[in-house]
Length: 136
Image: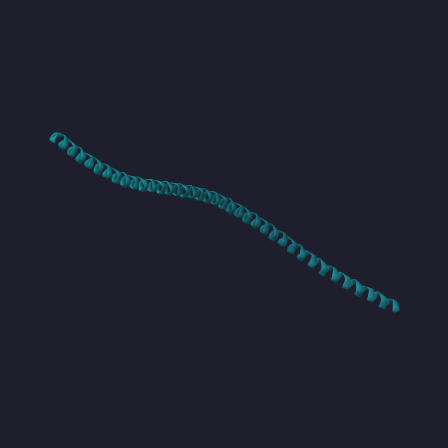
């Protein structure tokens, strides 16, 4: 009887072990499917990351292109600004020259007027002298 109880206990333990084994095999199969799903998801994420990286690289290239265009435009603007400054400086210089020429012209006109006055006085003196000589 003691032996029968031990055998019954062993059989119960074996049944429990078989049930546990079946349960673990089921979980293993389920986790295997989950692992496949995770692997597929990981692959999908890697593909999505590759596409995003390609888009980022494309955007960087476009940004670099726009940077170059902007720099070229700014260089052109700087050149135009410098040309305008040079033109303004030359114009200022020419206005100064014109002003000086106008001042010189006014000075020369006064000097010429004074010379004409002196010539008129000299002519009067000459006429006076001539008339005195003619009277003698």
